[in-house]
Length: 332
Image: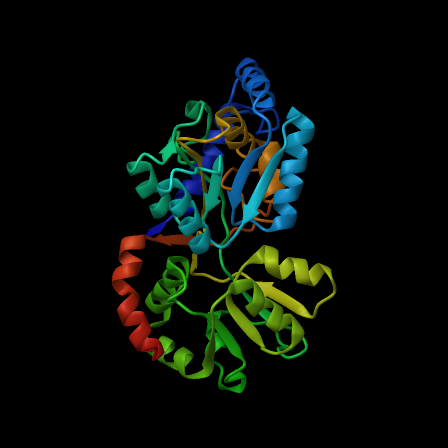
């Protein structure tokens, strides 16, 4: 089951227009409520964020947060799967560490909410454009997949995902192992719907499986592999900015790669949790969190506006399709 979210982004833009002159002065909290929350947060000490976001981006976000409010927040960065496992173990053990958690598995957070692990923040959700938050969970970033390639090896810019099955790159194509994350399964599901079963069979015959995204992208930059999919923009761009021979392109179909944030129901620092949750949904927070990337809010300074048409595959549909995807790829 897939859902096209292009219309949703148009609704965000329409909502922003209704607010008046863009989002420049917009905030999901009133100034008085924000000041009260900030004062309470200062009394709580140092907060903790669990996040899948690139460390340099998170550091910049939290540095600006501290400068603005005088509140320090530390962070722990892991992939979505390991982060969810760690969070679960800590909550079940009665040792809640994270005040706020940001990861790419909305279903996990919905399940956690059902167990009472996730609670409402002091955010006023009525002040946000429709669809961004329901008061407990908030979409804070989009990370549609890209194709990354080594420019010394792939000299002609690819035009679609179909380059992945070009025979001249046999065994020099790296793709994510779908057993590693439900997010990867969603990408395979969209690719299958777009190109058919035979595409996955050919991909399985000539591609090498990668268990982790960032090391796989690094291999492309080093020339050990010609290309990798599905890649993450921030990881590719970080290498490109250092002069590595790597480039990327965004093709359709693409999943949202949505990063969802939530506040722990038993957050050690509840005011810090709510204040940080609020901050990442302001234009300032979004411009830092999604610098040169894709924000779920419209017209945020410094974010990309060339968003590809995105579709979302439900977790349940992806899990149901996984055995077929594995079979087509020749994975036992």
